[in-house]
Amino acid sequence: MASPIIRLQSRRLHLLELESLGLLKSLFPQDQEMLETRHAVHLWKQEKKLFDFFLSKVAKFNIEKPAFYLDSHMCQTESILNILKPYCEITDLSADFEILACCMPSADFKEGQRMFMEEQGNMMYDEETQKHLTGYVSFVDPRTRFLGLRIISIEGCIEAEDMRGEDYYKIWRILNGVCEGELVMKSTAEHLNFQYFNGKKSKVSDAFILCGAVPNSENQELIYNKVYSKKLDGLRLVDQKNNMVGKVFESINNIALIKVLSMDVHKELYLEDGEKIHVWPPQYIC
Image 1 (cartoon, rainbow, N blue to C red):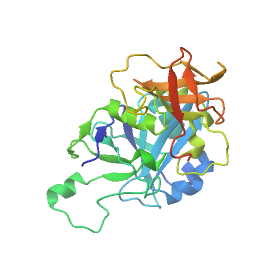
Image 2 (image 1 turned 120 degrees about the vertical axis):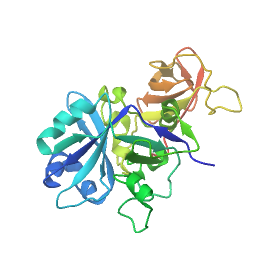
Image 3 (image 1 turned 90 degrees about the vertical axis):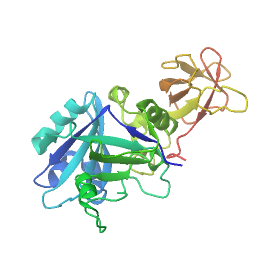
Image 4 (image 1 turned 180 degrees about the vertical axis):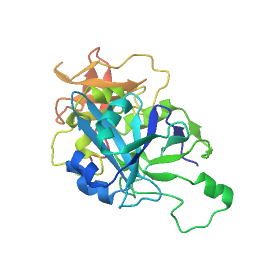
């Protein structure tokens, strides 16, 4: 069975061209080694607001004059570009290229690892295929390999048996404990588990974002219920003694990302209206 593919129309793509990699290293000193050794990395910058994005090396990467694709959520793009402008030349590729997600677990691979056929590979392709491969890159999601793959390609050249809408992608990333978009800007990196992204094994004992699902039957607690009508965003979580232990940070229908005060939470948790909710840590923490 083919893995679902999603065109991420909420994302924007830019090309960054630098005189040297040292310019980026100076801007993100905590990620210097990854910028050099990884094909793709998840980066963040905390100023008055929090911004996060991906950098992936272009297909024919040259360390002497490095170039990267910048993949950012549209609500953050302008602010991220303002941070990066003094360091590189920037070209908007959003009209000609597209960003896709392939929802398949990649547990056997490393975050940011490059995947599949590309124009720098050893295989020979016909002229039409070679044309479509111009600029093509694919890699394991650098936040967590459990999210699957990311693909950058010329618009329209990727065809898939199972193409889904962005709601499916939102379900997929929430079930894998990852927040993105406008809500990121209103939080802090630690509270969103950024310390665990890029495949890092954090020494921080407390994670703040957990996954949750409101049970829709006694035997199928974690099955996604698309007809669930209650709005979960902002609802408090309480324990059996009605002590507040967390709050719904983001949700879609009956599944949610939960911001908790501590990882030491009781198994019996409830929404503030008394409905039971099942909570579990993302796989990248386990």
